[in-house]
Length: 256
Ligand code: MF3
Ligand code: CO
Image (cartoon, rainbow, N blue to C red; front, top):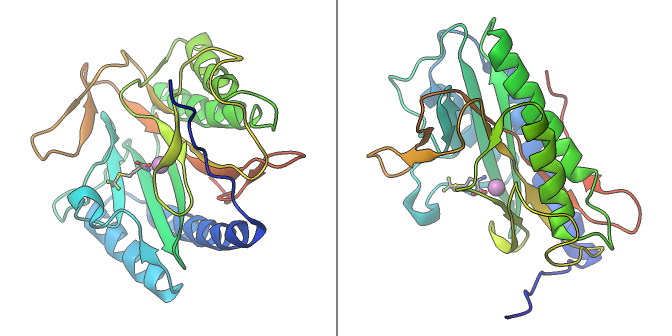
């Protein structure tokens, strides 16, 4: 088996990635303010694209493997990679996952969060809070000397203890010079397994959690992933830095 080459970032690279991530967080915070019944996902995308260029950065997703938009907007049973569009209007009770990648001076930052549209059900609230908790449970294992599997296992346990399921089909990833670098970061696994974490690694950890079964399928648009059973799904993502002390969350923002 090949030893995986997980890039260790220099101080200078980290400085730029931090700037990319700061922009991603600012945009996510601004998008959060816009989420209300009646707005369409096209408008959110347009806003994000304008703000990215104001911040002297570029969309990371637009053109990536042919993806047509700046953000991904996934509503209710949509898991990830929903494409913003004009007819797609948010309504009271929906949950909306927004995923946003920013490129700044050649380096990437990646962030995602799920938001309530107006008043939502107890089931939806539990799904969202569990997914967010699972992300932070994963981050709490992101220490130099731990293994990647410690992160994966912490996420999976947090979710499964609450009777929800983690999506298997999509994973988190290393990030920096490229949007997707080594290693892949599954949201399921075993403690003590996988590569050892080292200071200077930058990781995008992104649990996707389903209220029902973990199975997903892709819609005919070639992008939108939905739950097979039609139940709700949520998604949170932070780009983090492994240090010799506590993990640094590079995409932290004021959520809620
Ligand atoms: N955050 C996701 C990821 O890390 C979204 C990228 S998919 C794209 O893969 F195609 F829209 F870019
Ligand atoms: Co990502």
